[in-house]
Image (cartoon, rainbow over all chains, first blue to last red; front, side, top):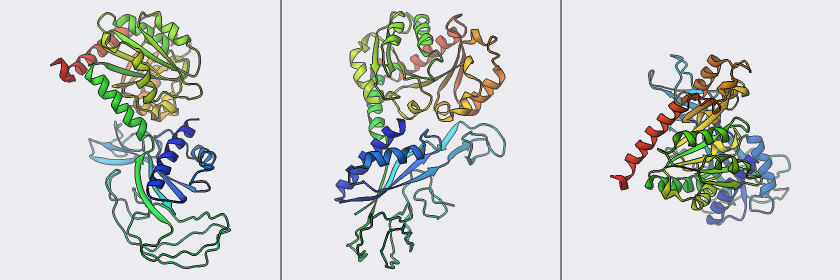
Length: 113
Length: 297
């Protein structure tokens, strides 16, 4: 149900933008979803299909770009990506508290007609 | 390597949030089965293109004409946070709280980790220095509100129905039912859930995540987004640590791994263990907030 409410927000933002641009149809909705956002892309797809019915975006493709978690190590002045979502610097193995990317939940773009 | 901003395949040289580079490229359409375009269009875009084209036309045939100014398919760049409405309302709440010098805490945990009891005992310990009000969210019932009222603090219950988290707008409405002028601490007890509430800013100053010793030491590793967002992690039910074979070193290491910057408190609402340290911490935080309040200068 979490993804349903996220998707509802995303879709209503997308439809507003599409209408403002004079769209008659939305073909693709591109989202950027961070690894630490707590959102499951599959669940978004499922919610999207249900919610898009009867709207300009019915039948549209949902393209989800995964944004990996990236941290900053202040000791090594190094930005590093973490696939397991934890912030251990690959050089000094200290934990970094500075998250630079990975919490995104963003409507990136729309392809419209 | 994918470009950060648009996934176009160029090396990403821009940090997230900085405006996109422009690039010209020819791109290939990938048509799904059932599409009958039968045309070839090497066209040159000067906008960021975050996707491979997969057209879904439900079998309709149509002509694409990609002459300038006459593009049936347009890409519009949006780049807006999906929860921007909630974020905006949360900022409004935050401004409202700051102006009153209120310290606002958002309590999050799994169901049953002891939020309600911990909050009730905290309020008793903090009185009379900090005068608290509580907003508590649950899917149904006002049982928690009744338990919290035993602390003497005013309590507003939000029943969310089927919604698994609190949103800034719900908090904005609930706080109108509290006499905020008579308090300097607002405690928000979120719906018991370690996943969804992590995404919703309520306008709080501090995010407090609870972990009870009965839940297993590896919970921070299982739910990294929630722990990653914590300013404070409170370990509850320390009185049961021995009985359930709680491994303190492992638990602390796991919390630090998921939340390196969070302050950690080890507590028991039953024996009052750790409540003094917690009290000192909150008094300091409240003083710091008060100093930020231009009205108090």
